[in-house]
Image (cartoon, rainbow, N blue to C red; front, side):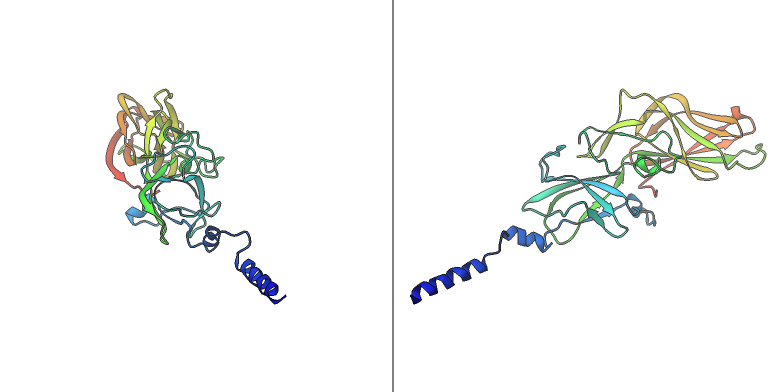
Length: 295
């Protein structure tokens, strides 16, 4: 009968209009209109320098509902790994916005399986002169912990802007010739930072680094920058007693500097060491402090 045919046609048309296995949310996600993107700003950018993140650098990102405490798991985003391709930051999977507002926390270098977020264990390398470590970074770069946050962000076509800050301390040692020192500073000089604890815990929700109170003071071999300048990343801490601090080894001779010192978080400290003919007469001069250092 004709009315049966008409009914069948209406049912068929209704079926064709329903997307097969796709919800409205799926359609929005497939359009990529709600993708979360990020703009990462290296601390060096604040000093108008070309130093910045490099290709293959990786950052960890957490997101929580605004005002909700950061946890090791169960957040809106949990330690998502983003890799820099030289132009943009690419997540390991597509990340989509949800309704509401969020707090974002990010850190560098990336740690695959953090054991905590309020007491994340972290250690600086004891040999920061090495050019490569298990992470693919050199010993110095692997020690330079960066942190950033952006609060109360909502879904937007614009990327989440994260301005990173150095959370460790940096020591720069400059070697200078005294009037009685013969010849030039040798190319193969070695510089060591003594009596600092290299281990710490980090609270990722606020970016605070705390020296390991049970850690043992050790020696860090500094990275050579040029013939007369060496540098090392140090956990923020206070040396309250006069102790051996910096040692310069040249041509088999050791020049030792003793001092009290306060390694401040996010600060570059400069120590000028004047090398004398007599290793017992080495002089030091403590220079200014710099935030947002370049490398």
